[in-house]
Length: 374
Ligand code: TTP
Ligand code: MG
Image (tube, rainbow, N blue to C red):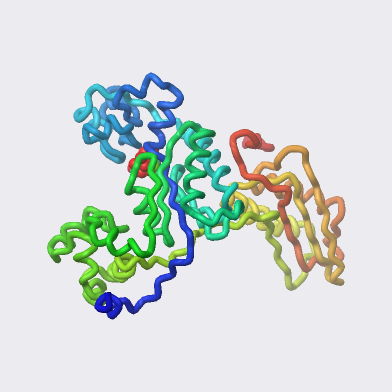
């Protein structure tokens, strides 16, 4: 052990509790749930290559089809050759997206620190969770049960103190797994891990690793930081840290916000309605971009303006329905408020548009466009 310590110059933060959740055969399981008779067949989620003239790629396949060697990203034609009995199902993204929203709602019961990676995959930081559950393994179990109760779908979860290890853990016992990697088990777990399982070691890197006689984590661990940087550049440095169980990347979540807005100050002041219109249009566009990024929409628009003499007023307009998330819609309501309460001739030094009364956009509350594009 002392020997190892000597080559462990890095501080490893083991205080976080990270869960990686990944749904099992996601698209395929949803289709099986919708049409249970599909369960007994190999099922491939792709357009049928017999109907597309051989085009298309496999999104995913159920586990039965995977036994024949079918996998994601393979051409649908090749999949048909490997598994001629398979049923092909055209993907229904609207449905998958709705299930993804449902899963995220469940995550939010435990934490808002959620980093989505794909429709069916996310990292959760549950170090401080909303239910004050001490054990991250317990949180993972609860999430898995609740997802199953509400969607009839299974997932696998991996728990550890960083993202790299949590993800490896979730793959470890797929499907329907809950696997944990504790700090004291990291060495053993990573020593045995085939090199191709390390994050970022893809098809191109594997042959080079093998040339350097690196076949698993144990081989990788023997290499110095300089050696890995020399051979793999910055990625080599990441590997050096990962194989020691160190990965400080944070869970990159979007903070829940009560309002989203943009404002600008003007020097010289704006003095004409035209200038105001232009600036409101810029603000409306930037608010629409920010709202889209967070997948939000809102019912209230707030216009803020400050005059040359520093008098500041805010006026709001609240609708019964969500306001469509677009530059045009925000500009429309901001302009209405300005026409009613504003006066460009007094000189305007600040304008702001803020949306409040926010909710996540989902399939029940989606808004219809206000303006037709004709
Ligand atoms: P994955 O989680 O990679 O696969 P999976 O959920 O189908 O199976 P597993 O049990 O191994 O996790 O991807 C999630 C979904 O994303 C998958 O159901 C289909 C879609 N997908 C594609 O459309 N193309 C791809 O190349 C991959 C990898 C996934
Ligand atoms: Mg998955």
